[in-house]
Length: 183
Image 1 (cartoon, one colour):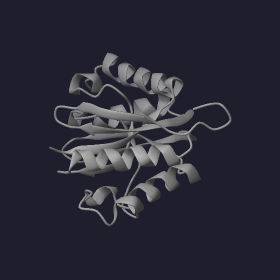
Image 2: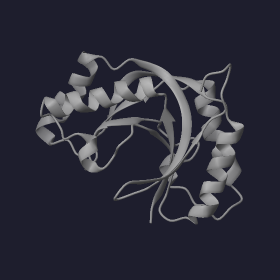
Image 3: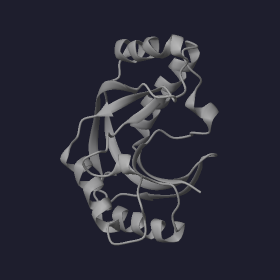
């Protein structure tokens, strides 16, 4: 079973991204990601085709305990013109963002956990998917819609979790350390 390690957002930021998901669905440019079983916006730090989930959960929980929450800005729109036709929000790569990715991969490097190469340091393209399996006819329109209607969101990364996928099932979510009384 495949697994993903994902970053979760503050409630305020999550609501903004969910609203964009819904607007894209309302315009009929794409189906809502909720229709694919994706219930929470996130950014994947790693993906594993198979893993000992108990070991993976231990490393993710330790990461959460040692990592403070940090701010995140989505400042551009991008796409993967693959068969899946993905449109995404691209985050500004802050120190906290780069640090959590680097620390997670450093922590698992001497384990049997084998990450998908696209998520390895130096290859990883952080993104938050807002449209998936967009029809060819609507692909460019969906990108333009995101660019025109406002995609510059600010908020915080407040947690890290583990998903099992297809179908998607959240196995665990751990809060990051709070900083100055806020998560």
